Length: 273
Image (cartoon, rainbow, N blue to C red; front, side):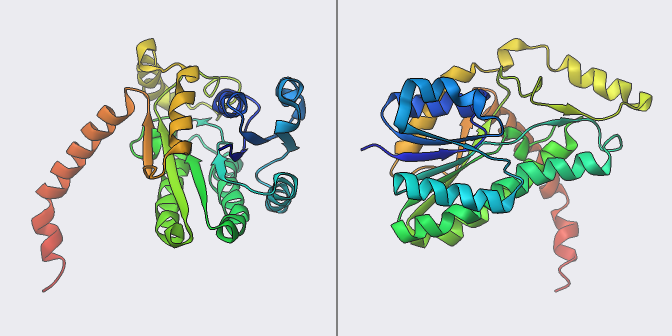
């Protein structure tokens, strides 16, 4: 049976690839973008199966209006994919207040507003699937991406909590955790802070780690995994995308566990009884 998919950030990258994958197989898609011209090719090809909506996810009122428009147009919203977001490149010290606030505003609050907007629709239906596009950097971190890391850590905590709160309504929640992919996420979609010379070494080390092109996946190869996630009767809370993500996170967590165990006597003594 066809589904109605509401997907944000559908102008490029994962969002557009996935929107087209859903349309190709006969689903209906509500595709949001800041610039509707970026969706003209999909509208031309798929006609009434796609509802393009101009949207800045940072606008809470507009988010609720977009969800209402989608519900009135297609009658149902089976899946919400919160894909809109961007990467802010810069060390913690280099990041100014506006850059920090804008990163959290889009990656966390934009996602939160759309989630809040769709929940009443899904509760009334008695079913739904909310898919949050997080990142492997919501579970482990890299330098020079501190505010991005923080935004995705927030998405992790928010979504894991949400899953426990809405399960009784028949609503599923999943987090997609991609490793690096050859999209323009680090190019035209990214923003950059000022550069302090004191961090040249940190930045150089980060750039050196980005030279292994095999570590970056092929964006088009992700569509089949996302279709399977949407079709699953029992979807996982977390789905890693790419061959690098899970092995890296396992390594990071093994190191964390070892450190936590080492300090457990101190932690237990702090309990006081």
